[in-house]
Image 1 (tube, rainbow, N blue to C red):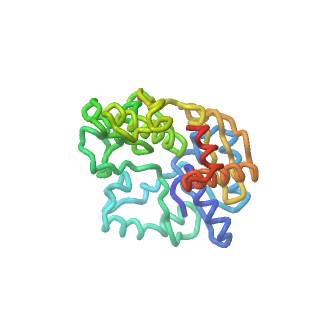
Image 2 (cartoon, rainbow, N blue to C red; image 1 turned 90 degrees about the horizontal axis):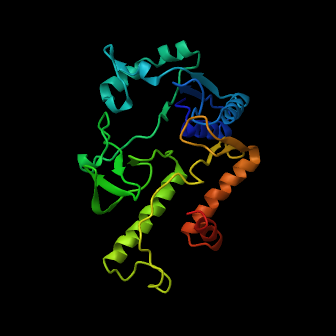
Image 3 (cartoon, rainbow, N blue to C red; image 1 turned 90 degrees about the vertical axis):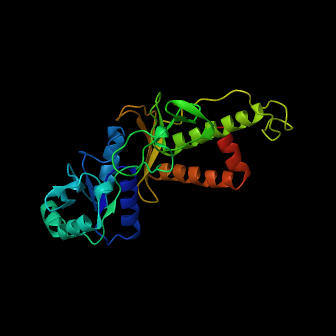
Length: 283
């Protein structure tokens, strides 16, 4: 069973069902549909795929309903202890009966990203409940902020970041875009200090001199949801509002496109010509 019908939950469930069709897979989600931030056409396509492949979906239910010990409710997995995990496991027959499914042998929690940034001072993190730490506060130049002021020579990028001026989806393209901005600005910082290896043509011409800013780029609204290895739904034009965008590619062509993205990125990391060319045109 998977708890959570976001991108990770749906992709994990469909992969398991593809490679192990005899395993019964159930998804439980607190919202009224899967991948609720996507446009309805994408939601419908993914839902029909799961129904067609025998993946049961239960919407409008929360896993925390059964995470309790001695009648005291547990509001998030951050509050779990050895004792109340045991109490929760004892309630599996009750849970399965209420939801009309066989008692699960495994439960996987795919319930969203968790900020785990306790290693940074509190002044650099947004307030958050639990013990995982908060999101790392950065400006649009990807400089880490301490009490609202940039820390010298400290940058951060990826899903761990939170911008005060911009809200980005927590997926791969915005994370890599942030990393591209951070790397550029590190080179600028190094050049301003008289560094000799800060890039530029022949090592000295056209060196970067000004900071770049993270923004909502053309690729920020792109998102592909895998449905097993041979199917996917690709959305373009998404904005900050849930449900925006258009499902522009479905089925095997979408799966091939996602595989090319994966292959080209690995090729770039290995200094391959095709991957380097493709991604140099994007970031």
